[in-house]
Length: 206
Image 1: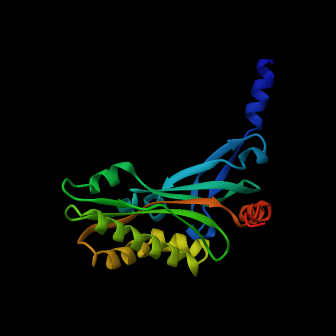
Image 2: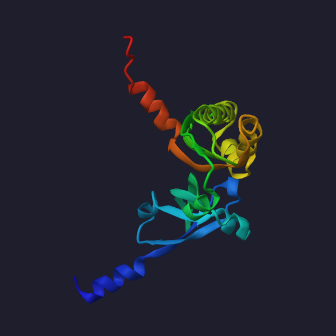
Image 3: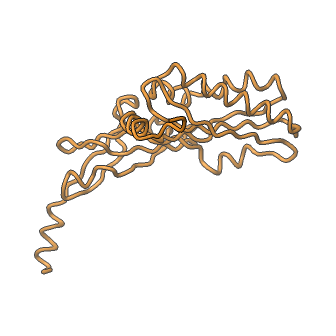
């Protein structure tokens, strides 16, 4: 390929402005280059909640978005992941205390499948039965939160700390807690993907 051809290809590239979903007020996430709009689709962009809210205290929360639509010079995204930074999670762990985790997969009222990973940190070391009871409480409350909420409503409940607070208030009666966080929330499947899975699944009884 000649130098002129390479130069022409570089000139043809355009910069697309990635925008957060309406739920995040269409905040600008950054810019991404491509010579064709279709090549932008599927790209992921990671930012922090602090950047979106212009609040440094939220920089320990990472958010991931995926571009699913391009119009003119704008690239629109969907939310795919919420995750606390490793440094922040390490800072919460104390010697002589327990870290109780759960992995809960739920379906929202608008048929999004989501995995949520809450974590509870105790003031001192809890025994096995207490950890089991705390984990059961976390699972129940996550399932309850998804049972009557849409995908966006569930995300809001996680990001605003409402789900963590609900778990803390219930689980602290089992054993004294120092902190409860939702370590990660991941979008596993969209409604159309869930529908296809249900259609192709084999009924074991049949």
